[in-house]
Length: 306
Ligand SMILES: [Zn+2]
Image (cartoon, rainbow, N blue to C red; front, top):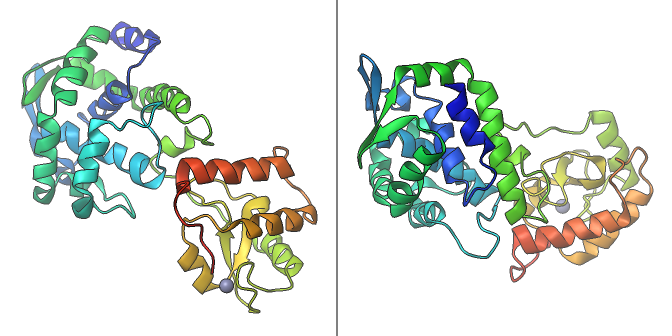
């Protein structure tokens, strides 16, 4: 069994992230609960019959944050890919602010979107047959796959190792398409906790700004920790990127990029900070701002101001 997966991981070139993402979806077969589409997995003595609904529900869920939250390109060019197009078509249904839980992707409400995905040539012609050339782990027709129990058992036992290896494969591919985007591999993790600066570190930052909101300048005794360059672009909470913001500014700015005068101000502010991380420099801040503008915010989108 291990050879079949090794063969897959040893293939150096990927034409897209589809195949490793498809395998990521398969990892759940031996281990899911009722609300996650268990009814689509039929136990047949030596193998499982898996309805493609089971796989595409997961497939859509994996791509949702990559498209809407992190805005990662899936091609080196501006071209979009089929799964992004499908999510775009159904964006009113799935929502773009946060990724719905898997349960929802498995629900009746999303059946149209799943059906569209199943019928898509990308799945029917590019993923399912081609993956079999790389690692021969299932048989398929247009509605389901047949997967041996020993494969499922192997995946179950090695789930976390396989998942890391798959994410690594996906990250390497995506880094090539998103050269100016930081922390691509972090963005593939399902749960990333948004850390906060410790109260004492944040207190120092606030007092450097005379206890005023970094954006509107209003005095207050309470501030929120705001990521100057949106967290979705730099998923870290380092002091150089955290500013104190009043509630109103924080919620109105959200994941937008502020107008340039604030870039100059934060660079000045950072000159007074101690314990800056090693990667920090004035140049780094300017480059991160420009990269965020072109790769995330949108070069023609209006920059935010209070
Ligand atoms: Zn404010």
